Image (cartoon, rainbow, N blue to C red; front, top):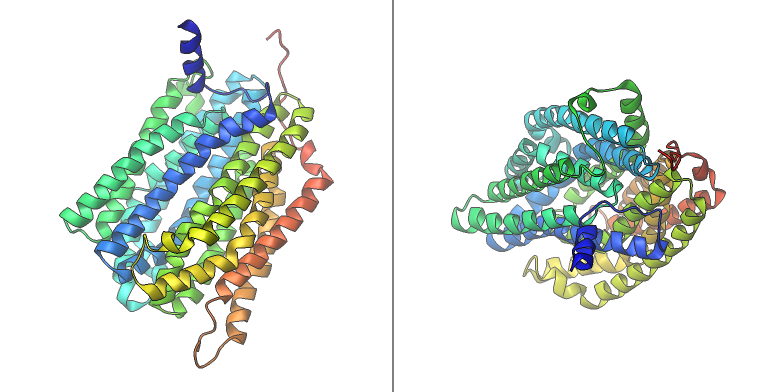
Length: 470
């Protein structure tokens, strides 16, 4: 009985990934991440299904038109989260409890400050920002309303991202999953209640989302403070320290900038998407929802590699890092290939979850076929980028994203649209949006592999393993 209790307890504790089979460590860590990412996508997917089914395609387009802007603002929290996760994993691997506790305390304070600033900025500038995107008049008011409510609850989104980054750095991917599943269930219930019963429209979807995200962040915070066997956070750990803040920014800023580049590109391309009209906007929303599911394994293995590599570099075990890289890449490629086949075979059925309009479904499926091969390329990019980030090299993935997104994807999308103008497509062929994306993914995989093979990331670790006597 005692043995069973110990095994159950181990599932809910921090995971030391410096021991045992790297393959087993990665699989055990990545599976909850995969399920968690699935639940995260359900937030957005349920919103889209409820909006498309009970309100209409215009409302679906309104939600989709506002999301790239919100994602751009979120990159600040993504940066802090990534920096915190890298530092936590390396200090945890090095068994340095004091630096671990100070890192967590400083991360939470930075998140609070940033949340307040972003909330005020987002609420008061929503209309101006949506105007800059040339949002169609028929969905402008709904887009602004959705965006303002989401910004009001940005603290919940921010703290959930930061806290899950910290918990994952400690090797705990299971408890964030449990909390997210609870919040996702609540989100579904609130979506239906606010939209179907109370008829709040797009605003109801936004309120359901921020309430559910706030609850998930509170649960993560409670979990962190109960992990007293790993770290004890005292009042003095909340005092900002220049060195720690500088390191968080240095590690997190490139990752945040990488996400900012993607989000800014999405904004620029969203403007092009909007010019194609409501039909293409609605189709794009569906494609991006399905894309979110297709990308889940890639992102999950990338995060798993960051934690695995961070802990083992902190412990000074480079042999395990090399072995883990091989296992992680194999896993990522196999899962991505299986998902691509599934999307090509069953994608049409997925599209029908969002809308019953045949023309929207046909557009969406055509776009998914163009993008399919890119998911295998992204398995390479995300897995190897995760390795580099875990080692402390967040600069290389940033400049690669700049080349693939700013230099390649955005100009190519507009050029293809320009050169495919015709009486049938006066603004250009909508396929331009997705051909350009697929090309950028293939280029990103090639550049990431080349930089990984150069091996400079192996020299970026900063935490040093403490002697066993300590």
